[in-house]
Length: 498
Image (cartoon, rainbow, N blue to C red):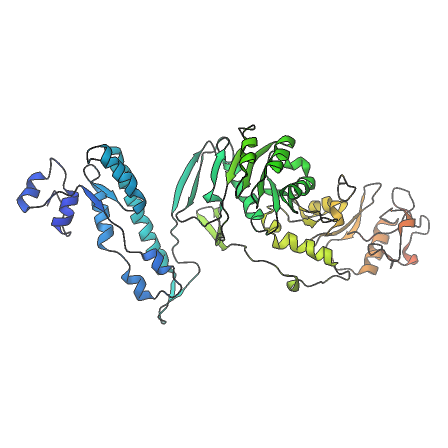
């Protein structure tokens, strides 16, 4: 019937949906088939039923719609004559179009509804496939499901096209999950500014995911997908000042995110002080938005708070996809074990938990050296691509405006090779990269390899109470000709390195 369009399907239903105007009129009249111009249909709620923890396999199977998808496909296929609606969110648009056109829908609108119908069927079938592919055991009433199904079918909805991808020669677009998790980046509303770029969105996600984990007022500054400043304070202004002070150079042109509604005073300080690509906050004071309009190119995003988190992280590899559970686990003080001779102070423990529990380490893309600052200044920044370089930058410490050093808080959260360098001549001395030698053996090795003492800090600085002094180096290991001297020729003492 109808040139093969209707075979096994009921002709009174599918014939009315698939019949072509001007081509199948005679066949329809012969068999008494009435034309159907509009189909409004909602599928069985398979997704919501199987989302329940106590859903049985029988309940899941009974909620697999059979006739519904078939009717949707028939109507969507014949979009030249038939309109189809699959979601209550479409009803207002559908009725407005019918009222404006004497009960008719335009060809463009019918085609758009047709595409939406095919997308809905694909999403529905993907949900069924994911559920059944994950069933590992059917013995119990509620089946045991694997965390990772045998076949993974994902559905994403395009939010916008991007001017280009990570680089100008790459094309790009932004897609969101079919059902976005409340509080995540995909739920943003852009209030002003230029179009968002690929890199803007990547950096914005890093900033927002980091800052939203804090309860106290917090500020995160991200540059090139890495936090260059993370801080908590009494308010937005205090948090921003501390975050900015962590690395003022990298903060230029960065993404700045807050976990509290942004006030006008803080917005003014930021916009007057530095160039900003994106501002993110759960909400804004009207005066803050008004002041931001003076910098019309600054992208201002509002992301309402939500309790949800992404459950999985993915990474594309050649013809494949890596999937892992998201790193959402927190850290408590009683879970930490001190393995060093020198135990951290309570302040250092608090700073360490700030770096770990606050998510800074998770967000840093390179080697993860995050530090808590003294005097209640707490910050984190990414570092060198190598562990040793990252360690040196933090341990050597660049001077801060208040005279502090980035290395004055937590010494380091990573094990590093025991290389040593003279503070004055800058030469590297022998070390113990594998960490297999005890203090006396390291002293022996330094003496044999370098003869002079490798560190030339003033001898007067040596103190029995200094935990970083190497007090167990026996005098017999000193070079008798240049005892107490470094290769640079200046008197000094042995320092174990940090």
